[in-house]
Amino acid sequence: MHDVDLHHIFNLGLILVMIAAGITAIAKKLNRPYPIALVIVGTIIGLINIPIIEPLKDFITEGEIFNFVIITLFLPALLGEASLKLPYSHLKENKKPILALAFGATLLSFLIVGFSTIWLLDFSIQTAFVFAALMSATDPVSVLSIFKSLGVNKRLAIVIEGESLFNDGLAVVLFKISAFYLLTYLELGVVGIGYGVWEFFRVIFLGLFIGGALGYGFSKLTSYFDDYPLEIIFSVILFYGSFLIAEAVHASGVIAVVVSALIFGNYGAKIGMSPTTKLNINNFWEVTALLANSIVFLMVGLEITRLNLTDKWGYIFLAIIIVLVSRSISVYASLLFTKNFPTSWKHVINWGGLKGSLSIALVLSLPRDFKGWEEILILAFSVVLFSLVVQGLSIKSLLSILGVNKKAEGFKEYEEIIARGHRFESAITEINTVRKRLFITEAISNEIITQYEQQLLESQKKLVQLFEKYPILKEKQQTILEKYALYAQYETIDQLNKGDILSNEVAEHERSQIMDRLVKLDDSI
Image (cartoon, rainbow, N blue to C red; front, top):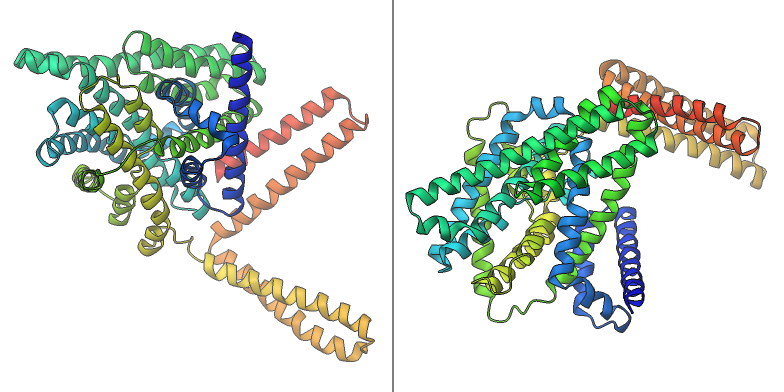
């Protein structure tokens, strides 16, 4: 019987992966943010009665299953992947806005939402601050997927990602204190508040220590090996081990994973990883994160449909306003004294502070007998749905209005020249094709072709002048060209190896050299 249950669970899991992968593939093909597409489609599937997937919906919308999949199974992988690829130098360069947002804005938002819900929604102190902690966590996945497709300023993307990584850890700490210890601390008065502050810092610093120690240890361990499959396994053990160990001693697992991955991806990569290993580890976690995110956002959409929102619309509307206003106040206030930080970026960070799967996973981890559980659940789900769909879909328009996604200087002119060049070349090709088909004389066709060739030559001259004026455009083109050349070289080595022309040893050596060069090119972009 046990084997049958496991087999059934595996089948349901495979169906979930197939649906998530299909939606993600279509969204990427249409150049749309896949997390939002998954939430919308998941919600539609949840509302429609489809007999074949009803068991799947029943399975994944169980609170314990959802909570386990999001927090224990996928959260360490998602946090680890994001932290692993984040250069420490970038964090250091942008530490002021990141710290201001991750700590200042998170705490301020937590307090504003907490007191506002006590006053406006008549929540109890504990219920209000549990909801406030849930609304303090931001999810950058949707926004960053839009940023990548639009080529938004890299520094802005780093600030948003940095805020989210540290903000998630803080939000989880605030949630646990609010849900399980707040009333006890309040009953003890001043002494209780002292205990609360101590617990807050203990959880954070113990998480930092565990993550730091494990990150350093595993970084040293990788220096004794040059075997990327084994080093990938080390990274899996590191991310999940740091999370589970920290949680076991009641520290912040989220902070432990972020710190361990940052150390492993920076110090570990420097002392113990060849470029080939670095590329393969990054590729492995990128695939893992894509799969995890796809499943997570589809599950969020399915989970939302289980709620009964009847007669709750007034509360929902008020909760959304409270969260939006508190986010605005906390972002602008925390960045008030940050120099050289454009106002347009503040607007994007404000509106781009989306709520996501972590908020839902946390609320589902609450005991069912928790006072105000149903109200928190409904409001948290509603705010997350509004955030992902309304804010997520409108962020692209906001970027355009604010001019944040403006291309590099000279890029528009470059695109126009490229477009004209392609036009003239296709015109010459078409004239030659028509001339042969309709037996038009060369004298007539050559006269027109000469005109196009002159225009093509002028376009090429303008392109050279543009590259002299904006060297960065030339560098980007050279990088793209070299990457395609390296891909072709890699494919050739593969073919020679498969045809027994090259031995496995020589082929692996050549592939390694090509990958090393690709890593250097990726780092230079």
